[in-house]
Image (tube, rainbow, N blue to C red; front, side):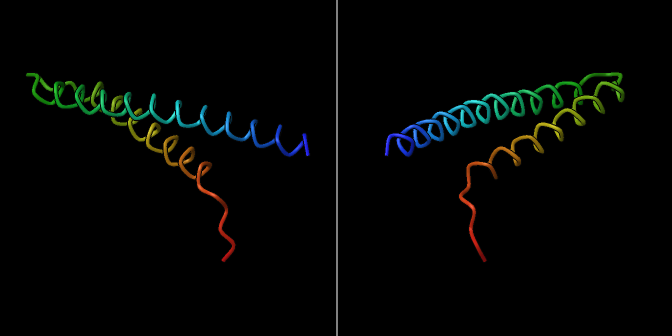
Length: 77
């Protein structure tokens, strides 16, 4: 019985860590939105910088999706 309690505690801690990481990634993703908007308004337009920001934003989105799927319980079809 104690093992069940420990594994439940570990799972809760793991999920809490995932939620914290998700929030960090979401904040960075929003910040990149702002940065992309600012670069877009600059003259002359910095295409290389824009591409780097967009690539990072896509990588963040992938990480966010992967972590969100870890939080969802497995559903047997």
